[in-house]
Length: 393
Ligand SMILES: Cc1ncc(COP(=O)(O)O)c(C=O)c1O
Image 1 (cartoon, rainbow, N blue to C red):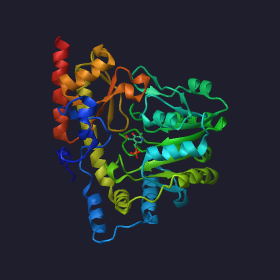
Image 2 (image 1 turned 90 degrees about the horizontal axis):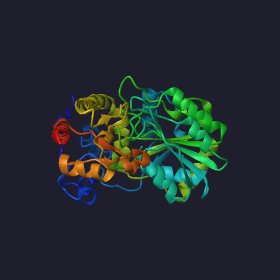
Image 3 (image 1 turned 90 degrees about the vertical axis):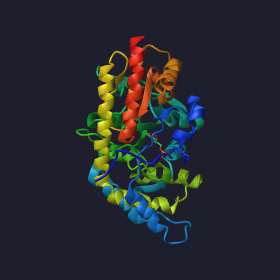
Image 4 (image 1 turned 135 degrees about the vertical axis):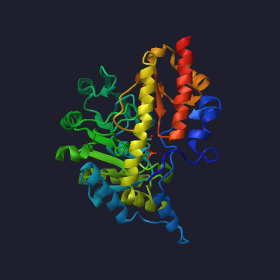
């Protein structure tokens, strides 16, 4: 019913993934697989909703309709078993901006904010830019290459001035979909120490069976009371350009504190075209998403097969969710700079450098495999040819 074999070319658009190639990789001659959006067409039913709205010739200030939020709430209840209420929901144009507001709302300059590296870079950049103290609680790697939380380290790093934990769930870039007991352990530590949890769940719909996303707020009343959750359509339906997500805050007193900081920076209501696109995605998107997940799994399988053939050089970190592959390239025995250059010059692929996700990312690269089948074949071919040459030398 949905065709993911090919997609519209983005070269002629202002897509970051393409326009920034020269700046990032020093050449246009790379197939870009870095920024976390998809090279897959945004679904027709989303575009149709926008076209329909445009039949009305005035595009002024508009409020997000209750029905848009209710569509998201129903989706989260049905797919993830979490019960948010209309009054919990805040509009946001950006998860990162919501994170900044949460930092402003719940911490003072100099107070501690925890990030679990390697992680999506704004998790630590935002903390530093706002002059809070960054408390690093790196994830630990297990035998099979997958990651988990380091609870002992977390407990040891918390002091009376540690106020907020930024949770990435599912986790970019390591691809974990946290298990209930892992999340419960985090919730327990945070609850006991009076730490608020900012749960960035923007990747929650991109989870491969049998894994299941567990919303932090659904764990228990206590977890719901100490947390804020960000959710949206940006990743799920390739709608980052619509710039619309939401923040759910169920605890009335946290909501009031968040609201004050939110008002201070004039978080308005965003763009009406985004509102209708958002509602259409949550209302009509299930079948498309199921098909997309199957497609992404095929791409992931191709990558897993390749990494098995060159296991001496690269290892694919097990992926439970997200469309981001965290490649352990330490077997290639290259310095980080050499590794980046190898991908650009030898493989002609533009990947995310592991080090940009924190120091623990040394020796790793992140590859975005949310591409149509024809592009995935090309990625595998370039990668395989380069690995073959490297292996021979
Ligand atoms: C974990 C995570 N949070 C937030 C974002 C960005 O969200 P936004 O564009 O809404 O700021 C990304 C994008 O890659 C992400 O991976």
